[in-house]
Length: 420
Image 1 (cartoon, rainbow, N blue to C red):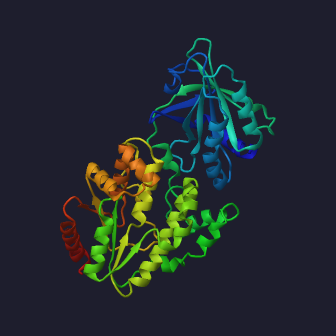
Image 2 (tube, helix red, strand yellow; image 1 turned 90 degrees about the vertical axis):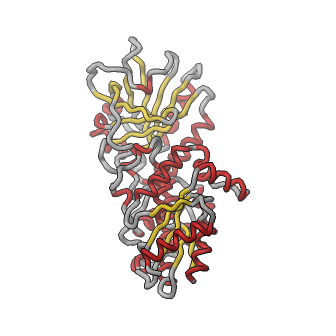
């Protein structure tokens, strides 16, 4: 842990810190000399008796870092007093890829700081956590950050104090820095490496790896057209894909593939890094199936890489649409080693109509579906991410008319694009 922490120190004062409060990000920076300035927004509503801390997960092993980040919140919520508030936090070097480290900002309003500080000291003894405390100056305006040294470190510079100052919002949402091959995977090898490293902690990982195709099989181009139907749940994908199968005499495949069903519940419990790698591998298994079936007949696919990427991007990047990576960003590029469909159709539907259809189905909602219903911004981010993915891009079709009319509209697209 000390080695990982020491690697952060040379650029510590170049880092920007963000805290998410009520859905908005508040940024601050640190400096060695006080040059005046306003109080950072995150500290403006802190009362005189409140104490503030930050915890950043610093393990050099990204599998361990991802798992511990999720476990840390549960541990803190179990052991902190009721007077403590936790908020998501991160630290990053502006515009530097893979520089983001995540953690939590803690505001302690309890009568005594002893229980909280005792817990934080225990964390630094054994866990990959870097702790800072924040102290208010006598004038009530000046704040300093005190970096706690790891238990095994006796270095003087680890105890240094820094002045806390406001910072402008960066050009990109902080999470964008770490999306590539952490939230969205762009090659079989990168997703494979994550699941392979989980073999010791997730026994099911070995079974998943045994199902993987070769790289050539995952990108082999079939003789017949491949049509992917995308969209949120209850937009009519199942009805449309089955109708297309019957009308075109095609094979219908679904992603994630059925062969992964025994392990989905297990991997859905894992942090995003592991969960997203699992579903990325599902796309490569589906691609192999497409290649095999597409040698004999057209193939219809119910969801593919667009869904995997759109949901991952929309989850990683919080807030309004403006926080998403800009159009044309490499985040939206299609993996070079993954089979490209002939046509991708994105079904869209008025949100209220979609909710009505969901209620009529009477099925249990997934966690992401619940988020779509309760968080309008999340739904908008998912839909916009769908539209921005290129290579191939989605062609949007309004799914509100009767099913037979939607079918006819999509058949026109297929005949024009795929010559069927």
